[in-house]
Image 1 (cartoon, one colour):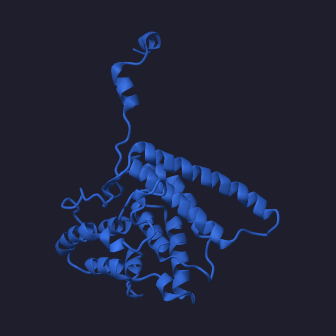
Image 2 (image 1 turned 90 degrees about the vertical axis):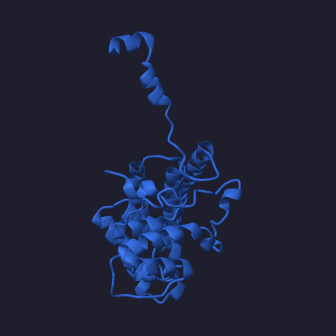
Image 3 (image 1 turned 180 degrees about the horizontal axis):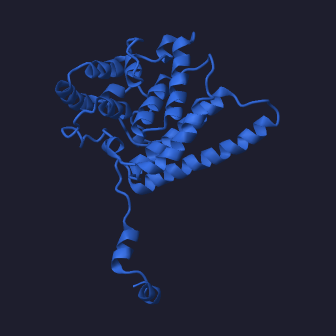
Length: 256
C-alpha cells in the first residue's frame, strides 16, 4: 500500500483522517474564531518576550505584574484550545509556562482572587506534577498570610481544592455556594452541582468576561473550571450534567 500511495496519493481513509477537524466545544463561536484568538495570544506572547529583553536592558528584573500578565494570556490560550476542541494533552506545556510565570508574580500589591481559583482548578484538572502543584499552593499561601485586602485572599472553596481543612474564609456568593456543595454527601452533591451549573453563568454577571462573546475579540469560552475541579476531587458521577454547556466534561475525563 505504501508504494501505491506514492503513485496514486493517500487512501480515502487517510484523506478522511486528514480532513477531520476537532469539534468546537464552546458556544457562540466557530473554529475560525477560536483559531484567530489563539493566533492573537501567540502574537501577544511573542511581543511580550521582546518587551522583556528591552526592559531588562534598563532594569535588574521584571515586575511582578509582567509575570501575572504572562500567566493570564497563557491561561486564555488554554481556554481557546479547549473551546476549539483540541486534545487536553497539548495544554500541558502551556500551563507549565503559566505556573512558572505565576510563581514569580507575587507582590504585596497582588489583586486577583479569580486567578488563584483558576490556577488551582486547572492544576487539578490537568493533573500537573507535584512540583508544579506546590508552586501554585505556595503562591496562594503567600496571599493568605499577607496584608493584602481580604477579597483577594483564598476562601473556603480554594482551601477545599488544596486539601486544606484547617483554614477558613467565607467567599463571595458563587464560590461560597459551590463550597457548600462540597460539604454534602456525594449523591446530594451531584444533584446540587447539576442545579448550580444551570445558574452558573448568571451568577457571574459582575465578572469582566461576562458576555464577551458579543465582542469582536476576547472571548475564550465560558468554562466552569472550578466546578469541574470539585467534581474531580470529590470523584462525583457527572453523567446527569455532562452536557451542560459550561461544564468542561473532557477536562475531567481525559487520559494520559
